[in-house]
Structures are given as C-alpha cells and as structure tokens.
Length: 134
Image (cartoon, rainbow, N blue to C red; front, side, top):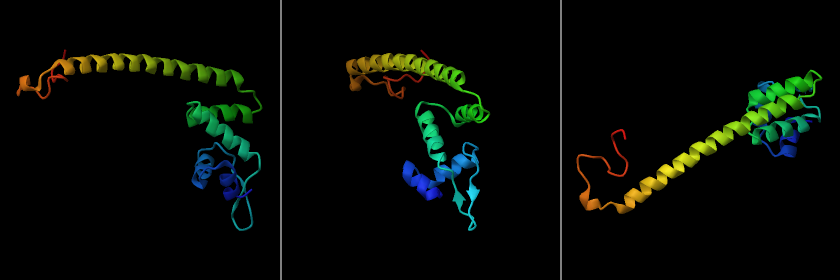
C-alpha cells in the first residue's frame, strides 16, 4: 500500500504516517523502484492501535513500549493494564485538583458579587484576586 492509500483508509494525514515511522512506531516499509513507500496492509491495524492508544491517554513512548513487547512475541496485556491504571490514577488526581479549583472559583465569585466597585482600593490591583499571599 502506498502512503496515500494508508492515510486515506485511516483518515489521517500522510505526515502522521511518516512521523510514526520516524519515531519507530511503524516498521520501515519496503521501497518501490521509484522510491515510494510500500506499506504492508498490517500497518492499518498498527496505526489504528496507535491512534486508539493515544485516545486512551498513552504517550508515544508508552505505545512504543507496548509495540516492542508485541514485536518481541510477548503479550503486552499486563504492561498495558499497568499503564492504564497509572493513567487512571493521574486522571483521578487531576479531578481532585479541578474540584479544589472549582471550590476556589466559586468562593471568589461569591466574594466578587458582594463587592461594590465604588469601594475598590486604588492601591490594590483587584480586590477580588489578591496581590498578596493569603
């Protein structure tokens, strides 16, 4: 398959295929006599796996580690499970941080609604968001 065929079939830009190849995520394709890349049809599944892995939050480095295991003939399931658990922990931590930010924003909004702009102190940038540490 030519790179355009792969890109069209997967609805991804050609440069994405080249990038994955350059990063070592895709095996180097055979070259036709004219120098064009000639990809094995299995590259479609591999690119789909890469894209789905990225959608699950995995980095290209993490994806490479999975592909390396599979290419070595090992089942990467345990490794993938571990990576996904780690991603989930990160998401849960970010959710806690976002909940704290939400509470802070609600408090600032509540305080802002109670302020009278006529009483603003010119020495401060804004009385809603302090310029000094609390």
